[in-house]
Every structure is written in structure tokens, then in C-alpha cells.
Length: 312
Image (cartoon, rainbow, N blue to C red):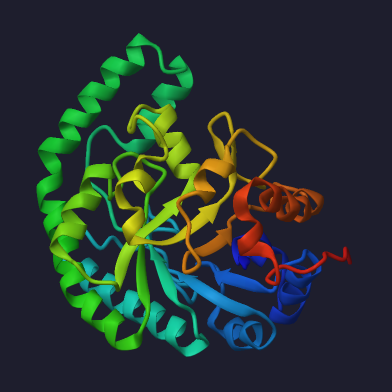
């Protein structure tokens, strides 16, 4: 089946019942809990919908450090040991939540390389120049800085996994390491190789985010967005499905420029599939995405798992 991330409608609902009812009305019988789901919602959602995955950190964190967002409030690659300790504690809580509701995996943002040229500034440069010569020179400078500074942050991430992977194995929950939107975030395509060579465990693998990988291709960070799948499909845990228009992602599949048929070729029956469309897409866009994916290589993952939508 294809689940729907609660990122689509969590901000619209003050109670879990109405949230679950809307998701069911859109044709979905399963969900991924996103980082904005409060702990008080979880048991009620689990009564009504199958929870296939949980996005770290979940449940929702009420205190966000200054300068951070709810999507990456505590950095597991930080040079601050206290911050890394907090990241470990909160990730274990997410694993516990996943285990308690029968979810197969958690999805993590695996930190970042602290740089002067940030991923945001690189993206801004790309948007301003449309990838012209000025951007290509800027990208070379960015990549050189990232390579020079990444060692300590990768080492910190490996220490993080040293503690988390045995915990995840005991709880029978997989860790899906998501490819990220900002270019200074970890892991890059080559960072995955370091992680997977060190940890030959079924408890850790790739979480392929379609939109992020397409943006990475546009920015010249990878030759092709399928490179993540070409290199690491044998470690594939799950996929975030969403479309891209220009440099804007999290659109409903079928409303943008992504060729989903070529992505479907890398999937297997154990791959966790989550539609990570955001609220900017309409209900009809989201409902139509089910048939769109069915007709573009995802038929065997949809039959029996997604229901006929009924608009409330």
C-alpha cells in the first residue's frame, strides 16, 4: 500500500479523529506520522489507520532551540556533545513509538556539515542564476568546503549509529536515512557509502526522497536523481513520493515533472511507500495521485491497500 504522511493535514486538525477521517476520505488506509504529531494523537490514529513509519523526531517536540526548526531541532552530528546526547535520547523515543504502533521504520534527518556556504545559500544562488556559469563556480567552491569540513561531522554520525543501530535491532525497527534538501546536510551520495560500509545491518538503510533527489540533480550535486537508487537500492527501506515543479517539491504525484515510472523499477514488496504531499496541493490533486501512480508502475503497491476516496 501507499501511506500518506500526516504532514499533509496535521496543522488543520485539533483532534486525531478528524485527522484520521480526512485521511480515510482521501483514499488512504495507512500513514506515516510526521514530526508535528503530538503524543496524545498517536494511539487514536493507530486505532483507525495502519502506521507504516514514523518520522524522527516524533512525538512533536515542544521546545525548539533558537535558530532551529521542528524538522531538525537537534543535530546528531553536532560538535556539542550535549546536543548529540539529546538527539540519541529523542531518536530512541521515536523508535519506541514506532515499535509500539507496529511501524516498520523510522525516517531520520542525519545532521549536517557546519559550513560558511550553507545549502540555503547554494540553493539561492542556483535559483538566481538558473544554474549558469556563476553558479557552477560557486558550486565548486561549496563542494570543496564541504569536503574539507565534513570529516568530524561524519565521525559524529557514525558514533550516533553505533548506539542507535543495536537499539533499533532490539526493537525490530529499521532506520531509514533520508537524502536531504539542503546540500550541506548529511548524507551526500558518497556519505551513504561510508555509512553502509561500516554498518552492514538490515536495521539501517536508504530512505529515498524523490523531490529532494530531483532538486539535487538540478543543483548539480548528483548527475541523475536515480543515482541514489542505482547505488543503494539493495539497502532501500522506504520512499517519500512527491512531485516537483521547478525548484518546489512536495507536490502531489502527477502534478509536476517527475517520471515516477523509472522510480518504480527499483522498488520491491518490502519497500515502505509514503506520499509526502504537503497542504499546498488540493484534495483532488492528492486523490488523483493514487490513480496516477497506479498507471505509472505502482499498480502492485496500490491494489488492496488504497481505498476509493470520498470527499467530505
